[in-house]
Length: 319
Image (cartoon, rainbow, N blue to C red; front, side, top):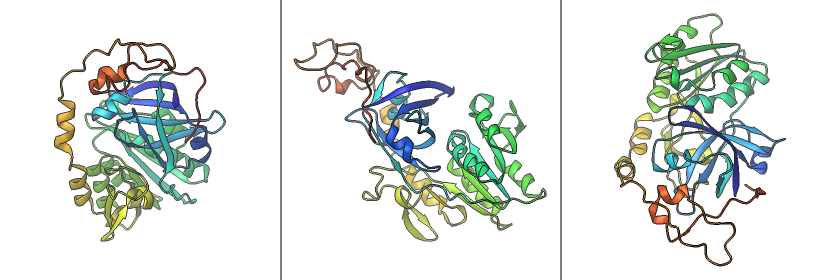
C-alpha cells in the first residue's frame, strides 16, 4: 500500500497528490511516469511524475479527473492508500545545457513540463516557460514554474490571466526574438502539441513532445501505447514518452486515443453509486469496518471487499 500524505485541488477536477513511495522517489528522473491502480479490479492509469523528494520518500502526481478511474482517484484524501504504484517507467528526458530552451505546458501539461524545466534550469540553460489554460482557474503550478524559469509567459483562452490566446501565438513571438530558442519542449493536449510542431518546423527548431497514449502494462508487451514516429512503430512506455515532435504522426495518435471514447462515456453515465455494505468484516480481516468511498463509487466491489479495512498506521513502502 502507498499512503497519500497530501491531496489538494489545483484547479477544477485537477488534484495534486504527494504519495509515500521511497524506492520510486530515489530512482525517478524528469520525464518518467508511474502506473497505478486505485483498487484491485481497477484499470492501470499512467501518470507522469511531477516531482519527487528522495529525502522524504515521496512522489508528486497531478491528476485530472476525466474518466471514471481518475475521478475515483481524485476522491481520495490524505491518509488514504493506493494499492499499486509501479515505476519509474519510461525513458527520462534528455537534459543537456542549451543556450535557450522554451518549455510549454498546456493545462495539465504544466505539471509534466515543470520537472523538465527545473532540470534544464539546474543544467544552466536559459529557460523560457509558456504555460496556458482555458481560464485563470486552469493555470496551475505558476509559482513553481517561475522559481525555475528565467521568463514565464502566461496565456489563457479567455484572457482572464496573462495574454489572451494560445501558447502557440506566444511561442511564435519568442521565436522572432533574440536569441532564438535552441530547443522547444511541449506537453499538453494533442492538438496543442501538434500546433507547436507546425510553428517550429518551418524554422528548424528542435522540438520534443511527451506523449500519453492509451497504455496498459507499461513494459512494451501489450502494444497498447503504439505510436508512429518517423514512419515506424514505437511504444511510448519504453521508447518514450518523449519523441521528436516533427516525426510524430499526430493523426494516428488522435485516432488511437479515441478508440474507447464510447466505453468511457458509458462508464461515466452509469447509475449513481449505491451505499456501501454494512456487513461485518470477515474473521481475521485487519481494521474496523467503515463507510468506504471505493464501494460507493464502484458498487460491484461490494461483496469483493465487503468493507474497507482501516488503513494501517504504518505505511508499507515499495515500488
